[in-house]
Length: 70
Image (cartoon, rainbow, N blue to C red; front, side, top):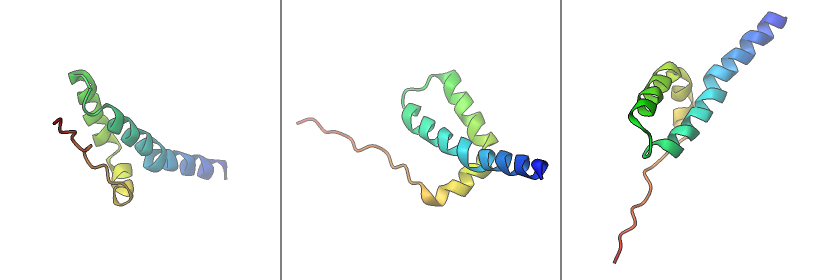
């Protein structure tokens, strides 16, 4: 029983918890990341792709609206 709970907790972390944290991090740092940080972000997206795919129908991050100065 303990092993089954451990597998369930790890699967939940891999498919839900870490991808949500990753999406929030990407949303904050996308336009200001350094080259090393951007490479790390691409790796994390590749590594947690199944979880991001599970969350993708529920999330829609559109680009921020541009401010036109008059």
